[in-house]
Every structure is written in C-alpha cells, then in structure tokens.
Image 1 (spheres, rainbow, N blue to C red):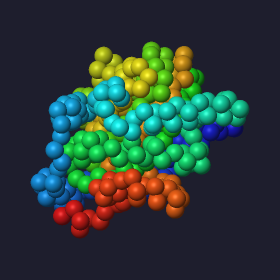
Image 2: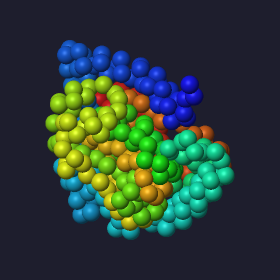
Image 3: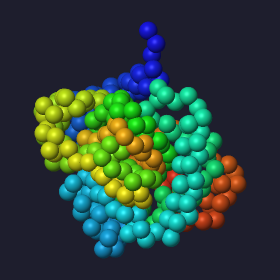
Image 4: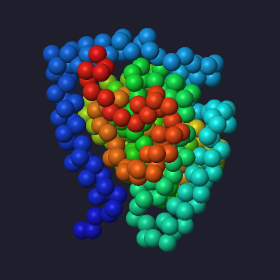
Length: 311
C-alpha cells in the first residue's frame, strides 16, 4: 500500500508529539498541575507592571482577542512603517512559490511551503514581525516577555482534502499563542479560509469532546459537539490580517475546493514556551543588519528565556 506524503507527514507529527503528550498528561496530575499553575500565575503577576502601553487600536484588538480569541483587520489599518516593504517581498515570494510548486510534482501534497533557503533571504518579514506596536499588543495579550518563533509561507492546494491542520485542533506550543495569518489573495467561499470557534464555545467543545490530548478532530466529531452555525469562517480580501490565539480556540485551515490560498503566518509565544519551532540559520550579515535596525526590546524577542527570569 502506497502512503501519501500527507499521511507520512501526519504520522511523523504524531510520533513527534508523543513526548509533549506525556508531558501534558504529567501536568494534569493534580499536585503537579497546581504547582505549574502557581508558577505561571506568579510570572504573570511579576510581569504585569512591565506591560507596554497600547494606543486605541491596540486596545481594541486586545479586547477582541480576550473576548473572541480571534481578530480580523485590514493590514493598512495597522499603519506599520515596514508593511509596504514586507508585502512587496511577500507577494514576490508567493509568485515564486506558485511557479516552483507548479514545476514540481505536488499532486499528492495539500499544503506546499517555501523552502528554508528561500525564507532565509528575506529580512523584511523579520522587521515587520518585530514592529513595536505589534509586539506591544502581543505582550499585553500573552502577559509575559514574548518570543518570536518565526514565519512560514504556504500555498493551500484546492483539492478539498481534510488532513493535518485542515482538521480541527488546538495548538500546544504554549499557554497562550498568537499566530498572525496574512492573506496574499482574496479568500472567498471555496478558497480555504481560516476557520475558528470562539473562545467560550471552544471551552464547551473541549468538555463535550473530552479534548485533553493533542490531536485532530473531524468535522463529523465537531458537529456532534458544536453546531456548524458556530463555526466562524474568516473570509477576507487580499492583505487582511487574522490574529488568533490558537491555543485557546479550535481552529483549522478549511480545505480549499475551488481556489488555492496563499498566506504567510507569523508565530509568537511567551519567551519560555513548551515547544520551539525549528530555528532557521541566520547569516552573520543578516545578524549585522538586525543589530543595526532593531532595538534591545526587539532583539530580546529573538531569544528564549529561563524560568528564573520569569519569577
């Protein structure tokens, strides 16, 4: 029997998740859960006095995230100085991804990503990811010093297949996670929009599904717990920004059926996350550029911290 690339990827991810599942189960044991919660709350309390101030837009986004778990906004409303440069580079990279994936045999792959070699060349994404106003919002939401985990460029193939992140799940990299998805084309019905279930209804779904381990949930299973009318689809135009706490809401990339979806995703956690993305090598020349163009607060977001620094 031939195993598809999607199934191989799924199996590999399941194996990779085993240690994290064991760790998660360990901390569900009441005495250890209480200790972990105490340390976490102490860290939040200690850092509260250092949280940066927000402007009116930042306060609005923070409020929506705390209530809903997800916020959608046109990128131009953020008014970041680096947006034009970042988006120009991103659209160029998306075109390269479109061309290269067409030339390769990707007929059995649902999600096609840019190579690490391609992504390593583009410092513009890093500068946008470290925009001070953006970091202010994320730090206020997470409540702790934050770590920028990196970004990924992706093409979602219009094949209607349900696999991997196209099924319902909750992320587990940290207690609070912010993922920022920028649509690089108009996302309409049939175009694979980001789907989520609001924070409060997600809590209801967790109880009904007994979802306390890492894993994916099918549409059929989710429909038994939560009516489809409560599944929210983020249909939006090119350049729209989806900001979501993927650790607090059930979410998925809805399988495209009519149109491919191109997007770029940025990820942020606390500076002491449970899981760190695979680090991409940065050349000495790029580090020199980063050093010249970022302040110390931005540089701190590129480095993991120790527990002692939180408490």
